[in-house]
Length: 511
Image 1 (tube, rainbow, N blue to C red):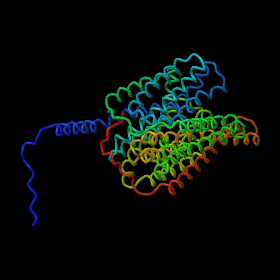
Image 2: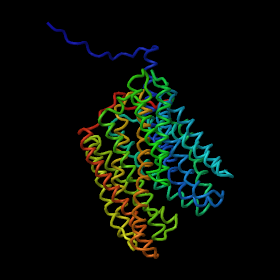
Image 3: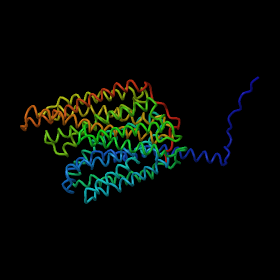
Image 4: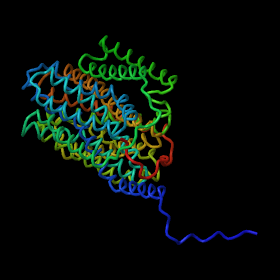
């Protein structure tokens, strides 16, 4: 015979150490839950600073060259020094965030980035400017994965996570276009030096936000630094980025370029073999071999190729062919920003928790292909409103779907000890894809332009048409890259929503 359970006690709860601790823990959780959106604002500002620097200095380069007196051959190093350090050190930066704590790593990255920016803005010679850009890249490689991993462990509820990553993805995708606009404003109305100085107040505000809103938590447990993995990864990734940058000027048949690519690939193969054998790998292969995360890394790398084509070659078209000023060119990219914000903050948060990333990423890649195909039809006398603006908006819609979905998916379901390195891989894919796309598409565009000039002469009209022919061929190849990405996403990424994290809806941000 069963007995009914006793009714719940209605007496006064007992007080004691356990109850007091529970009350304190509950209060901390409520406090963390209330400030999580301020955490997002802080991390978004840090991410914006890193992404801005990929393009903001490009606008200022002619003025910086005139002011410091360096040659055209040296000019590329102002860009390459940043991308070399950033791309080569990202995996290490992600692991250091896991090892020493994400908030601490973020703070070090912000402080170092601000100091390096101040050094570059005050540069009186070419060497100082290049050194400052390399330091920016190195500290950016610390703060970028730290920021994304902090976001990952702050938002784990699927609905809130979708909103947060939608905003973060919009910043990551639109930041390069915003950099073009901000660089044009600062260069035209102040000085090229302010394209570097502007990072100082941004870093200060983000640092104060981190101290105020991001909670201290102990570093991940069981993480150790894999020195052989660090050496092979840093040398392999840096060598690959440098080889792609060198190919822009020296060509793909240059013996040094070929040697660098071969050696870098061998180093990365050695890196993978090392990761299979060491007890504490720099990059646990379980992070990459998950089909969702692996597909997201691949998708964002391919998207970076096409997106950088838009920024690079459309800037050439607007300024050289249509006569736009740098400032006007920056404003011309606002429809791209509007498209990203629309899809990443309105569409992705609503659909990603329900249907998962496969359909969204594939749709984004198809939209990218449509926008680039539209740009492929440009001619020297094409107007901005009918021929450029629609393509930019459609491209922006596609990039918003890709970036917000990929940032979310690539960090979803990771173990706490892997959050930093999983976040670093997203930025690595974006950086390496951008470097490869810039080098490859530059070569294709230059080859088509030279062939057109040989066939049609060097009259002003023929030269203008030749430049547009090279740029539109780059758009067409990029459209093909997006179509390839759509096919691979359908094949690799499984259907259905992303797994829900087991860390709880308001997991505290890392130290």
